[in-house]
Every structure is written in C-alpha cells, then in structure tokens.
Length: 413
Ligand code: AMP
Ligand code: GLY
Image 1: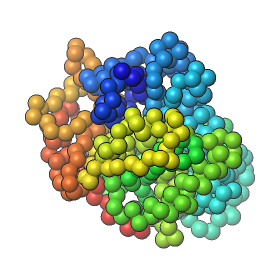
Image 2 (image 1 turned 90 degrees about the vertical axis):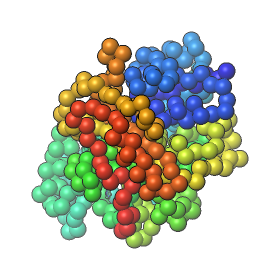
Image 3 (image 1 turned 60 degrees about the horizontal axis):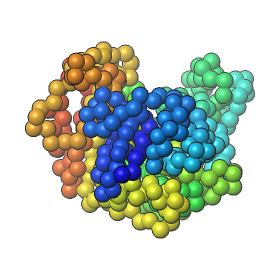
Image 4 (image 1 turned 120 degrees about the vertical axis):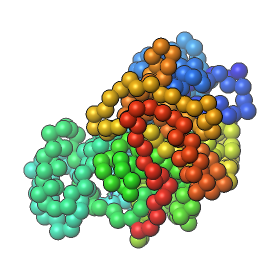
C-alpha cells in the first residue's frame, strides 16, 4: 500500500483526498490537519506547521505528499521534504513567489511578454499617490504585495478613492503596492499540472467570488464553482501557448522551475485572455468542481509529476459538468455565529466537501465562514444545477446562506 498525505484543512483538501480515494491503487490516505468532516472519510493528523509536518514525514516517510494551500508552499514545505527525498506535489518556496509576491509575478510576466494588465509598483506611499494623481482613466486596481487571501484588492473609480486605497494598503503592508490597469471582461480559471518542464492542463472552471447573486456584495473566499466552462474552450490553445508554456520557461530561467499545480486566473478580454493572477496550487472552490471530473487516475498523475513524466500524459475527463455550491454561515465574510449542529438527511444524493466544521459529542457543528460545499455531476450544467440545488435542501444548519446562481453567468465581455 502507498501512503499519501494531503496537507490542508478545507473543502479543497477534502476534494483532493477524494480524488486519491478514487484511484485504482491501494492507498492509505491521511489529511493534515483536515477537519471533523474530512475525518468521517479519511484519517486526519493534527499537524499544523511546516516543522510538525516535516518531522512527521521524516519519521513516517509517506510515498507522496500533496500540498493544498499556498501558505505552506510559501514557507518552503516542498524544499524541506525534498531534502528528505520525499515526493511532494507543490512548488518550491522560490517558485511559490508566483503567488506570494504579486510584484515577482508581474515583473516575470512583463519580461516575458505574457499578456496581463499594465502595472506600476512602489514601496513608497508618496510615489503611489503621485502616480494615481497622473492617471486619466479609471477604474484602476490597487493590490498589496504578498499573500492577501484575495482580500487585498481595491477597484477604485477615481483619484480620491485611489489615494484612500493606497493609504489603507500602505498602513497594512510593509511590502508595497501594485497599481494596475482594470481589465474588462469575464473571468475563468485554468489549472496546469507541471513537472517543471512539461505540463498538462485541466478543464476550465469558474469561481463565484462575490457573496450575493449576480456578483454583488463583498468578495469572499469563493461561494461556488463549476466546470467545465465551454465558452472558454476556444481560448485553450492561446492560454497554453502564450501563457502557460512561456511562464514555465520563464520560471526555469529564473532558476526556480515550477513543479505542482499552476493556477491561471484569467480575464477573457476583447483582445483575448490576460492573466489576472497566478496561484501556486489548486483553486478553492474550483478544485471541488474540477477533480470529480478527472478520469485519469489522480495518483498516477501525481506520480508522473514527481517522476517528471508529465510530457507523456494526456488527461481524460468525464463528459459531464460538476457544480459545487458553498453553504456558508450567515454573516460571512463578516462576523458569524459558530457551533450550530449540522444535520443531513439520509437520502442525500450529493458529495459533500467539508471546510469550516468541527465536532461536538460526535456530531458535526459549524466552525467557520464557509462550512461545506455540495456538489453534483450531470450530463449538462442545467441538470447538475438542478440536482445540487435539490440536494442542498437536505443539509440543515441554522442561519446558512448560499448563492442560488452558481453556473448562471453569461460569460460575455
Ligand atoms: P487577485 O487577488 O489578484 O486575484 O484579485 C481578486 C479579484 O479582483 C480578481 O478575481 C478579479 O475579479 C479582480 N481583479 C484583480 N485584478 C484585476 C484587474 N486588473 N482588472 C479587473 N479585475 C481585477
Ligand atoms: N478561487 C480562488 C483561489 O483559489 O484563489
């Protein structure tokens, strides 16, 4: 039996563990630290820092480690495990800068002609304000450098708002700000599995970041996703040829080849796809919609990454659509109550990926903003939506909230 360790504690990591669970290999799967919902399906290990994970791995030598969230990668978990000769899917600390430093990513794109919004970067508040004073075209997008969990982005409509955003971000970060052109279009995500040289890309998927229907309200960690996104397919070759391949080459040139999952956050604009951001890992909630569609054995895929054989792979996909809807605690992303019991009807016909849950007296209770994702596959997006929204009614907890329009965006510029 091969032992696989999945790192992370959210619905994405539950989806990753389920993808390993669907492998035809006999696998012992553990998730660290996981959560009480994941623990219903898999072993969980109380490891929550790079040190704890490395020391566990040194003693127990798992055959494969798959890292879900960016923070462990940015802290160098892969580098530490490589020193122990343990296969770990996820980029090195240097390569993880593609997500952990927006300025690294923007400069790398700029140097290599990769389509993205034009930008200005500075550590200096006065310079940032002077730059904004000179701008004639709004909106502008202002972001803090460094990991911000999607919360550090301000879209400003005029100079005054821009100056306020700069002042706020500068008071929150020591790392400087990026001011960039606003890209008009529609957003879609694409993952590429890379061994550092070659890659294979997945189907397109689409996150729904805002809290309310019709993309209104504050940004969240993601309220739902679906895959595939057929309107994006016409752009696949261009994204692979003009974005993914040159980025992987550029990362090699920078001396930090990118091994793991490259997440391309794309804006489809009038002039084609442009990069909004790269992440160094699977997206959440997109992974919950993409992984269940994968026909290729996930363990074989990870082994091919570890052995640098991705060039020989062609991923195959179920001819279906998967819709994943997040059930959140009412009040999220602001403050919310925790500790509500979660009840699930016995005739539920949906997969659940658990995120913000813990257990009390053997019962699952809510403990986070995004509590769980519910997902269903069907031949069409309409059917998958119908199923997921029917089944979701069989999951009960007080004050729950979910978006009713996951998968309904029109994807037009
Ligand atoms: P980021 O943290 O860079 O992923 O940005 C979060 C969200 O802000 C993105 O998913 C977009 O919806 C929006 N955004 C970021 N940069 C831009 C841009 N240059 N133009 C338009 N929207 C943007
Ligand atoms: N879905 C956006 C992210 O994972 O960053």
